[in-house]
Length: 313
Image 1 (cartoon, rainbow, N blue to C red):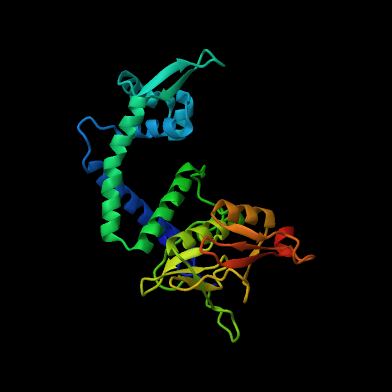
Image 2 (cartoon, one colour):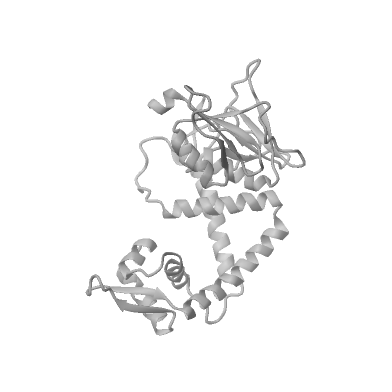
């Protein structure tokens, strides 16, 4: 692969510029957030920090002020006014920690839960209408998946120092389903062309967005948008690509059986099950080779093959 230089001198490969992609994501997320907060906000609506605190208490349950500060990635003292306002409005309660009487534990009240629901419903409705009017079904599915990935980035502990390894060359643990979704225009596959190369795979799907989400999360495939607007994919190496097609019967019984190479069979099986697949042949059916077979959300049966050299490394 040829290497070049991307934004701010960051090395890039295959035309991918990580910092340019990051800037595009940041701009889009910032503009959308501003637009949502400006739309139909009630006069007595929650501030962004109040909404965030209530969201933490709703999803995680009772928390100490220190735990909320860690989740918000702020100093505890910066939350003092927010917590006082929420408590005064009856949106949260504060009780002494029975395990440590020096600490207090905060919990969301029924009033706070109703306020949280009312405040977010307006923005959710605006966003749902906008997505329905402006995006295709495939684009809506891709945006939903991107939202989950943005949450993962927001929750991750990433060091701010520049990485010692070029951004474009950093790997992810595909078998655990922690791959980064990359949406690109046009082709982005490996250009290692030669006679006899397996070059393209069409996978039947009932819901293209759901199938794309499954393969990205379970195996780290890269989703891209072709020049004609269709959603396609590249496998974990970028060497084999394809697309999902609707209106075609799935392959529940193996005829031609495709195998996906994995480095850790146990982790890969867990990823398949976690993200909506089903194991139809457990490990051991092709001993001494380490293989298994799974059914994807559309009903297609594919195989898993644990490559010994990958497992050893």
